[in-house]
Image 1 (cartoon, one colour):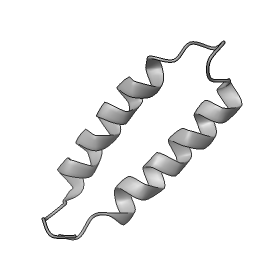
Image 2 (image 1 turned 90 degrees about the vertical axis):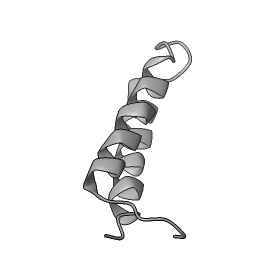
Image 3 (image 1 turned 135 degrees about the vertical axis):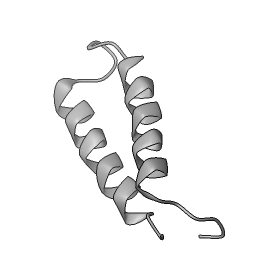
Image 4 (image 1 turned 180 degrees about the horizontal axis):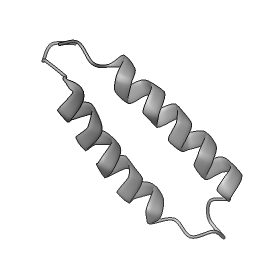
Length: 51
């Protein structure tokens, strides 16, 4: 990545993504799909850490 990403940046990104997920109601995003997306976002966030 062209810029440094540390633990704090990864956690902040996850906070923002969690807020985005919470904007969807259960009729728009099932609990099963929400969990799948959240697990993927966590893996991506920590994979991007480069410092």
